[in-house]
Image 1 (cartoon, rainbow, N blue to C red):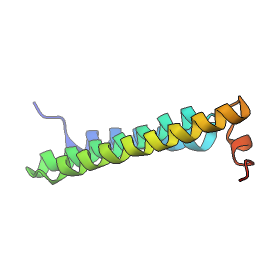
Image 2: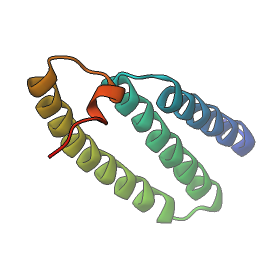
Image 3: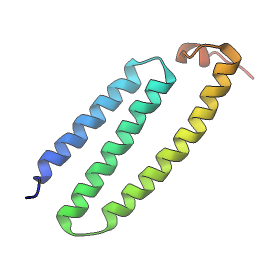
Length: 101
């Protein structure tokens, strides 16, 4: 039994919206990165759902590209967060945005 396409797209939209709210509302950069990852995964889910619906492999290829990009983003972002934590000993986006030079 196949799940209807509009349900999967609705789930992807809901996950993306939850991730967007998490990025906009939270001040902790780790939580913001987890919310951004949720947005990336929602996009990958929709790509895979459409690819399965149309019997093409392009959606799976895009999902792998999304996963790779998200992994690179997390690697760089976590390095920046660790460097900011060592400098300030706190994790707050408002304080990180005040860092200079």
